[in-house]
Image 1 (tube, protein in one colour):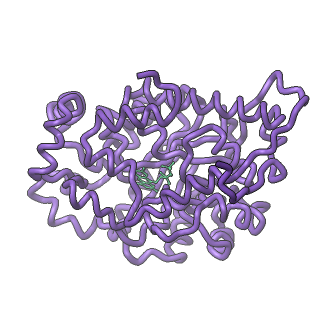
Image 2 (cartoon, rainbow, N blue to C red):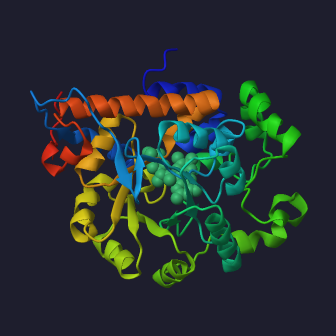
Length: 387
Ligand SMILES: Cc1cc2nc3c(=O)[nH]c(=O)nc-3n(C[C@H](O)[C@H](O)[C@H](O)COP(=O)(O)O)c2cc1C
């Protein structure tokens, strides 16, 4: 199959990954209303085509938090990147380095931040923080990120509860991986993944699990005893965010903001940025679509902090639309995962190259030779169905 766009990679990823894992990555929550809405809204936003501007040379680069990057995308933190391919996080971080964009390491990654930093040397790494019940563990993660020279910390604030992913209950997939008959049959039906990913881990580092969790969590026998400490904090408030602001001397970015008032509070506690995110349709199914909220938030706080955004990027034009709506950079979750599931570093590179090329083409039709010319006048929302 020719791999010409992100959807092609998704289709091959769907065939290669065990169904439980593919659905964990690909799907939304509950009725998946938000998952559909994200695409409907992105598709309904139209770009003004402008002609006869000189677009012979297009510069897709932007500056985010003082660093120049090749195009305005950031690989979003995703908990299972290390399971789509053996060594997945290192592979995607290398692809991001090659593409000239940042890679955000997740608290729940399968590989430690130290190992990713070492094996993808020179990559622009960010770190995503989930706050544990045991705050000392959180402080330890911050200390480790700092000592690696990581400057940008995303504090994920929109996961106050575990989302209701009903098909994961049905298909037996979960992390930590637990044996189940449905899960075992699913894996046996995908021998390539079984041999190339799971068994490779088992033979080298053991059954993959969250690498930033304490040692005791990683053995079956002691896992239960530390479980309460590593549960995501149910009581996470602006006071905690302010506390993290004090502990962390780099840029603090609050991820998951969808209300003007919350963006304002992020400014008040001294955060340097927010990610306007509806978590790719994976958390609150009734949430608003992030690109709709984005202009409101940019108007409210855009002059005082960096406003990033995410959810639903499958085409370069989606990134251009987010930038036109006021984002300074756009995170992508699933797209690089589909790439890595197809071919590790090479697959992730393939996806990032395609997206960069699509951005360039899109800018050309929009009559813009750089993102400096991209603003809100470039987009309009048309709510009719043009068919
Ligand atoms: C498989 C998967 C795991 C994710 N894990 C995390 C996570 O651990 N922390 C976090 O802040 N966001 C997580 N996200 C959300 C992404 O960071 C991002 O907000 C979202 O994927 C953007 O939507 P997109 O996938 O349509 O690009 C995850 C997303 C996916 C698809």
